[in-house]
Image 1 (cartoon, one colour):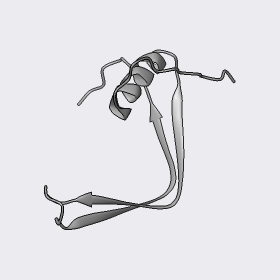
Image 2: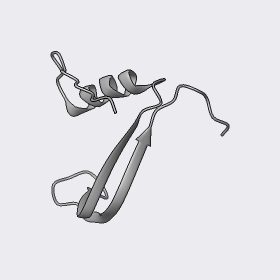
Image 3: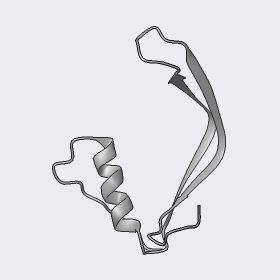
Length: 73
């Protein structure tokens, strides 16, 4: 298995790094696997510091694959 070492250059946010990583992996048959164990994510239902939150619970593997081949909708 090939190891991937990405060194972001002047990246200003996680979104920028993710975009660069996605571009690098596309067309290489790559997959990114994240494994979560009892992870909770609180998602605001609306804007504002005191807004109610929905709680998403993740326990398992999330696989993200890249492709530039269009899929049927």
